[in-house]
Image 1 (cartoon, rainbow, N blue to C red):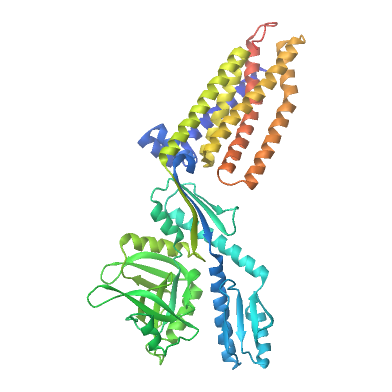
Image 2 (image 1 turned 135 degrees about the vertical axis):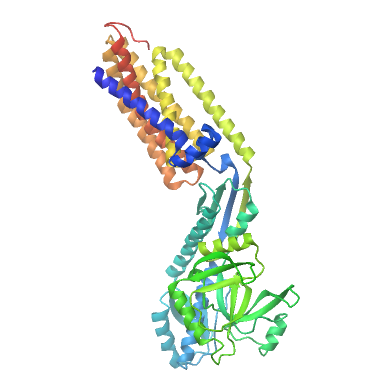
Length: 550
C-alpha cells in the first residue's frame, strides 16, 4: 500500500515539474532558453504562451473577395478560345462577347451560321467542359458556365485567396494569425493579426493582387500619350482581343511620364505560372525583381517568343510586363526566352522585396475590398491581461480560503490539486502553442470552478460516510468511489458542449473551448488521482481510530 501511494505521489510530482517547465519552455526549447537568457523567466513565458489579438493588440480585418473577377477571367479565356477555333475552321459568326457585366459567366455568340452550330457544340463539349450551350437568344447562342462549376470556381477563389494571404502574412513574422473564411457573409475572409503594428503596410500587402502577366504589346516601349492617340494609331477601333492599359515611361530627361499601351487582352503567361521571384539589381545597380516561370509556362513562353521575335516577320515583336493591370515596362523580343524575366524601374529596396514576396506567395485570384477594419491597441490588451489575471488571482485566493475554512485539513489537499490543475493547464498552452485570448482566461477561471466542484462532491461524500460511522480509510475509499460517476457525468457533458464550440465556433470562441476541455481533463487527473494519493499518504501517518480533518 505504501509503495503504491509513494508511486502515485512521485507521478504527481513528476507531472507538476514537467508542466511547470513547459510553461516557460513551450515547444521550442532553444528559442525559449534564449529568451530566458535575455529577458528572464518572463521572456520564456512570452515565447511559450502566445497571446491573441484581444490581449496583445494588432489588426482585425473582414475582407470581401470579388469572386466575379475570377469568373470573368475564366470566361475571357473561353471567349478567346471560341474565337480562335471558329476562325481556324472558317466558321461564320458576327461577334463573341460578354454582354452582361453582372453575369460574366455568360458568353453570347451572335451571327453564327447554322452549319457552324455543331462546331460550337463540339468545342464546348471537348475544350470547355465547365460550360454548356443553351438555346438561341435574340438571333444568338449563349454559352454559360454550369451552375456547379460556377459555384466551385467561386469557392475555390476564396480558398486560394486565403492561402495566398496566409503565405504573405507568414513572411511578416506574425505569430498565431487567424485567417479563415468568415461565416457571416458570402465569400468573405476574416483576418486577425496579433502584434501587427504597421497596419498600412499590412493592408497593402494583403490586398495587393500582385497579378503579374506577360502580354504581347502592339506598340514599342514609348507607348502613346493618351487613349485617343492609341485608338487613332489603330484605325479608331481596337480588335476584340486587344485592350488599352495605363503605365509609366521614363523619358529622355529621366522623368516618369504617364503613357498608355495597346496590349493583348489575354496574357501569354501569368498568375500561377510564376514559380518564384527574388529581389535583385539591374544593369545600373538599381533595385529590380527577377522572376522564374514554371516548367510548363516556360515552354509555352519559349514557343511564343520564338514565333514573335525580331527575327520573324511579326511587326509586333514586343512584350509588356503587366502588374495589376498597369504596364511596368515594354521590351522588344530579340530572341527566344525560356523561364526567367526581370522587372525593373521605380523600385526601392523595400518595394522590390515586397513585390518578390507577393509574387512568390501567389497572386490573389481576385481583388478584395475591406468591409471592416479595426486596430486593437497593445495598451487595451495589457489592461485585459491585468483584469483577467486579477480576476483569476482573487478567485483562486477566495476559493482556497473557503476550502481551508470549510474543510480544514482536507482543504489543503484540495488547494494543492487546484494549483497543480492550473500548472498543467498553462503547461499545455505553452507546449501546444495555443493562443491565449480573453475568453481563454475565462476558460481557465471556469476550470478552477469545476475543480472546486469536483472536490466538494468528493469531500461531501467522505463526510457522509464518516457520519454513517465508517472508519476514515473506508470513508475515503467510499467517497471517491461514489463521487466518481457524478464527476465523470458532469465533465463529459461539459466536454461535449465545448467540442461543439470547437466545431462550429471561430477564433476566441474556439480558444475558450480548447482551454476548457484540457482544463477539465486535467481536473479529472488532479481531483481523483492526485487528491486520492494525498489522502492515502495522510491516512498512512494516522493512528488507528484517529479522526480525519475534513
